[in-house]
Each structure stands twice: as C-alpha cells, then as structure tokens.
Image 1 (cartoon, rainbow, N blue to C red):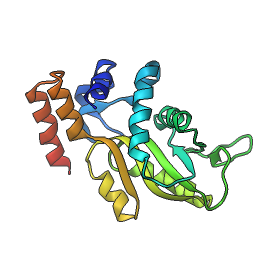
Image 2: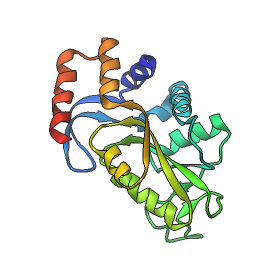
Image 3: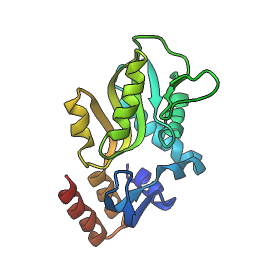
Length: 196
C-alpha cells in the first residue's frame, strides 16, 4: 500500500504543520482527501483498496457522507457495481425535502463510507439520518482512521470500523518511502499519544 500513501503525499493530501480540525483540536498533520478528485488513477486505487477492505462485509447499499466521502463512495460504487445513497447532513428546504438521496427500501443495510475518521461525530450524525429512515447500519468504511478515539466511540454504540489505513500505518509507509523523516513521524506520534 506504500504506492497509495505516496500518491496521497504527492498530491498534497497529507500535510504537516499546524492545523485546526473540525473538532477544534490543533493537529500537526492534516489529511485532505478532497484533492483526490483531481487524480482519477489515484481515486481508482483508493476505490480498489476500500473494496478489498469491504469484501467480507454484508450490505445492500453504499452510503457515503457528503462532501469528502461522496467521491470515494461513487468510485467504490462504480467499481463494485453497487447501488449508492447518501444522507443529507443539512435538512433540505426545497424540492422533495428528502433526508436521503437515492433509491432504498426500509430494512436495507447501508455501508457508511467516508474519507477520514477522527472523533466519530459526523459518522454518528449520518448514521442517525439513515436509521431514522428505516435503514440498518452496522459497518463504517473509511480510508484513514486518525486513531483519535473514533473507532472506540463507534464500537460503544455497536458499529464496526473498517479502515484501509490507520494514521500510524500511513506514517510508517511515508517514512519507509523516505517521503517524511523520523522527526515528522515522531511529532505526530507524540501528539497522538496526548489526544487519545
């Protein structure tokens, strides 16, 4: 998987510095997977890796979280020839006012798909929308688990996380490929110890 890590690094999807996360926390690393839409080959590679991660899971529909999860979910949908729906994270005030876009039936199982997992807040919000409409969610698939307690928060509520990479694995691949140095890796690892 080091080629995937290298591809993410080369397009600037993995950045080092000081960044404010959605949670308000300050992080020495930022993962910006919105950039992959400009790189179709890399997007296909991501879809393949996510498809392999999901191969043992049972579900009827893919349910990516807008916005960052949507391109990944769509690429995965095309690769697997799998139907896709997506929850609206903001209530629609026009048109049909549907909380979920796409075609689905009550009782179907949706695989929640997103780019990154940090604290699980947005995942739980999306799950609430899906479950309120009679869908079942058991599994969450992400490209990168930042290892900030999100997997544990999901597990406490009965959901299982499946990630292509943990942040530690990503850092290890980047260092092995000589794209980052030991100091960069150490700064992130020490930060991880503080926030978990």
